[in-house]
Image (cartoon, rainbow, N blue to C red):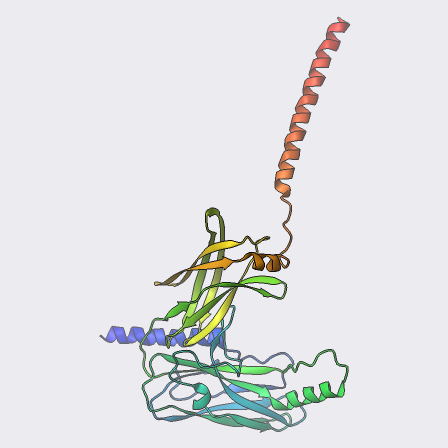
Length: 348
């Protein structure tokens, strides 16, 4: 019994370490005007270097403390916003999107559990600040994944003012450095299995690229981390027409949904039905899904314009040329030998 408990805590600590490594954005961006130093809590699991991975209790409040450093010569106002961990279209974790919504089966909303804050930091100075985490009076099964997003409000306002002053500016996008740290909560050390659900794939154009878009959900309060994905695509009635996709380091957040993209690298699409087999695997976990992709003639006419033209197969041409050269050399050798013998006979 004791060994089982030790094993579970080792798994928890490993998840904490890997989870921070995968989803944390806690590195000062190039040209950033500030930096954040998280403070360790008593209920912290592992190190607070990448954020807060906390063992929490129902109906309790916690102060998430941090230090804000200002690198500019002016006062810098830094905003603190709680975020939801989401799964990106390239099957990675992200906590830097303040618009990310709660997952389909989530019983907890970090945006409502954590307060926001604005921290005014003096020039070349630092300020210690915090936000409040309030745990509802209910049981937490699995983990709740999210983060804290830090952005310079002063920098955003300065960029907006610059854009407004340039009436004929080519770009109106506000881009500012941001730092995000993990906030992962759990009440016990139970290890759950992800519950993956896959929708029907469709073809779509993304810029000048054709992609296979597949809806994906994880309805469990536990993530799928450091896994792999294999996809086998076969054209119906054409067993030789196979295409394989392989993705390493696949990460799917708990209680999340997304549409992940697979680029179509073939030179030409053919109308008809394709069979797709998706295999998500990690250690002893295997999730296999069989889906169909229906491609119409209307889609073919539209999407084939975006695909690269078929490249010529120079390998066969080179082989034919080499064969002709060998035959020609053999013929020349035979002619030289034949006329050489005849010439020597005439001389005699």
